[in-house]
Image (tube, each protein chain N blue to C red):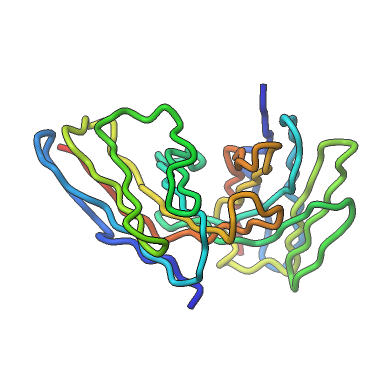
Length: 115
Length: 109
């Protein structure tokens, strides 16, 4: 199994809603990532979890809250988002954050629209 | 600062060969990745180079020169399905991926 599975694939939410994005991998990878990608731009790193602990938070607003319940799961909790937060949210995993040959496997992403 | 440069867009003909260049300036270097991304989809891994030279994988090859801060992705026998964005990404000294803006490749019949 070399897949990273993200749910939902599409999400439309109002600015007062609370929702969560989910990511799952069963490759035994110990590093998991959340990226945000706007149209025609490269992915922007948001958070990195290494061995289930948050190792990097790239100055992301508190309306985005990551959670890593176990080594296979990564969630992104959303609350009070703004329309400019509409984007493709990508989850990725890799063998080990500190491993040199760290090929990242990406999920298919969640297309988020904030209305 | 950290910087990755690649052309914004390239056009090539089906069956031909195209080379997509990437130059980088980063704080440290722990490898360079090429990813392919079709519109609306997630990036998929193509290649990884950490030593100088050419890595060949089927129709795709990737080259690295660390002294020049330069890489290229070579696509041979182009097919219509190769129309996509190609992203160059460098892993810096903190093992973080620094991404280029991507090169949109258009294949014409």
